[in-house]
Image 1 (cartoon, rainbow, N blue to C red):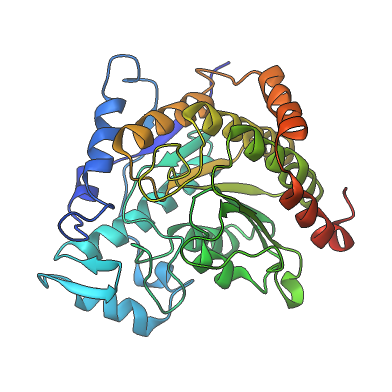
Image 2 (image 1 turned 60 degrees about the horizontal axis):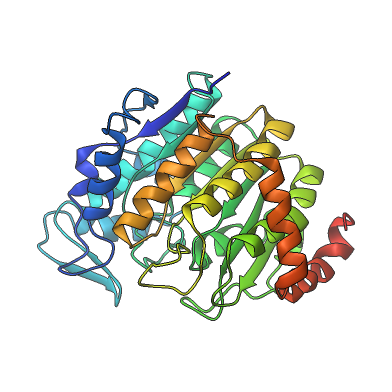
Length: 352
């Protein structure tokens, strides 16, 4: 039976401008929204209206002084937060709406109005830390949503899978000492922001709850599938998350202008299906994806479409194809990074 998949979308997300010719442009969402309105996609999803997050909710992660700084940019024609991250007059409101849209998606899943959801929002979030904007990100949407689950719903085990090409240094830093959140990241390395080494595995109570898989340039679908099956799946099944997030950046797409990875829309579908298997096994399928990066307009659009078709069971990526890719990676790819990650975390997880 098909699943009810919710979608957060709103024309107000187009109002944020990061500057002329900036890769994180409103055109990304315009193309995605047009795809959703096409005959083959229209009517397949449940609309989840967004709302503005409160300062209290944003403050679950961010310092008051930082929230106040972003608030002060409202109605300013331009404000530079870092060399890559600028605001326009509407950016503060749009960032609050991005957080609130994701929180509404979380509520919809937990209230069983939908089975899972995807928040198609901007600006993205995973580079933002407690007191700093970075990498096109203002508020860390997924980190706030994780803390919201802990605060409002008293959940104790949350999984964040971040497949964006760029390492989510903000998300990692926020939860580095926290065992209530398991953060798993595949990302190109070396690349911006320079973090995400194999040896970065958390500290204190969070030791082992940060898992980084730094992928070399030109890593492709079979290698990503191998990493998810060999590392993410066994660790997650032992951790038994109560809720799963995907920080869904689509810049690993094979033709993305900001990276050198080779993931296809079909590859994103396969990764989604692997994560769905984890959420089905551990937490009744409770899963929400939130848009992060992805700067090839056609690539991000076709990849989001592939993910949504998996989430809603319009399509179901074949298990034999996943196994075929796994065998191909074992036979024809350099999987040494996967082996090194497993060696790093095996003393903590004992699952390999």
